[in-house]
Image: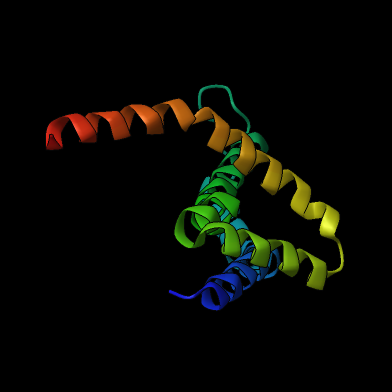
Length: 126
């Protein structure tokens, strides 16, 4: 996969995550969750709190599928550059700061794990 395609994929995934996901969530998912929960309580959690928790879980799932970490994992650095370009096209580059910083932090945290995994592969191959 070429770097231009990775860049474009980063742009498309970011636009989907920032524009399409909130629209679909507001139009389809939130009314469904609200209707399903109704006026119930679960373990002393009120219905509004339960609805907010479920909506938060939906956003976490979308973030895992379309967010910055997924872009980095699937399309690498060029995908992340595409993500930053998408935020620029949407008019606010500063919104890209948190996804980029979180990707950097996660990358730094998993360096020891990645090193341990690569040492293990070298030990089994040799």
